[in-house]
Image 1 (cartoon, rainbow, N blue to C red):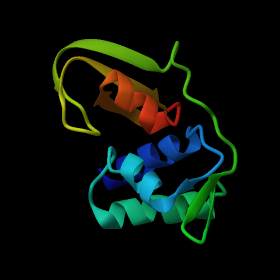
Image 2: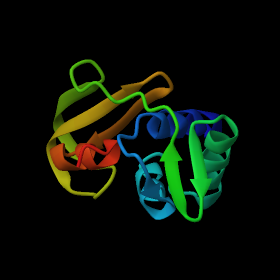
Image 3: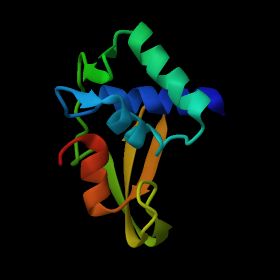
Amino acid sequence: MQDDRIALGLDLLRSLEHDELSVADAVDRLETVSTHPAVTREILDTAEKRGIIERKDGIIRPKHSEFVSYESQVVQKDGEFECQRCGAGLSTGHFIKYDAGELGPFGSSCIRKVTGRD
């Protein structure tokens, strides 16, 4: 299970649409994968070792972003959901399909925040 979360976190970092962001902002996004500090730390360490990100002085710079395609990777599902990022109740959940699995649900504004579109 932890390996799945690591792979999902790496996919998320690979798809960030930022030139740079603070470690705190990166952790905010990674908390949608796991709120366990050791898992978050392992995701960041692994991403740095694999060349997915560069980390220096509290700043993370994605090295090669593969932006999320909203047309093919984001799926909307109707139902009763709780946003993975902010905890708000949702009647439509937005899910991101990555190679490692599905991440979500998110509300329409939180999915944009998680991917870096806002």
